[in-house]
Length: 257
Image (tube, rainbow, N blue to C red):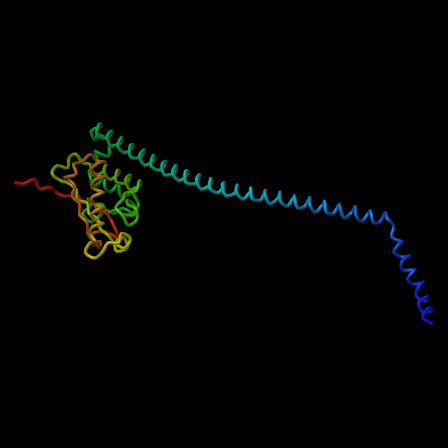
């Protein structure tokens, strides 16, 4: 019976072994060829990935260099802009100096010099928005925003040009014993910008008045000793409107008995 049972399993085993022998050799070769092709493709992809990574690093370095160059160019451009602004301010100053010299050479024979000072002052007021004529009819009030940078006693180029125009008005060769008084009046907002403490309110006004005096003397060819300067805060009712202002008054100079 044992021999019969063992003999019964021999045919299935034979069939199984016969099935393994049915795989063609060509298929095995094809599988190996495909495997080699895939490995070659993987190696190629790895090589391309390394090349892309190197390219990315190179582009990153270039971007950093380009950003540095852009910042350098921006700094150079800013310096050039400041230089151009300085050249323009110097040119404007030379033009004003030339105009002053030309007026002095002419000896004041033009129509503006022939007019009386009150008339010249009225014409100045009419052609300079924001400036005001004070009650005496011979004094001028000018908002500091037309002359100075905010919170400082530094004249702007536009402010220097305006004072050049005013100098032509007050440069009166027939003034005789009269001179000028320049008053700087400072409002609270300007005091805060300039960080003026209690008891020092007039310092900013005085600095502006002195700067105005020097500019007028230079532009009009006047002796600075004939122009007094003073600073006060807050503005008084002498000004037609509030706010920080510069006032230019005609005054008599005492020369003694």
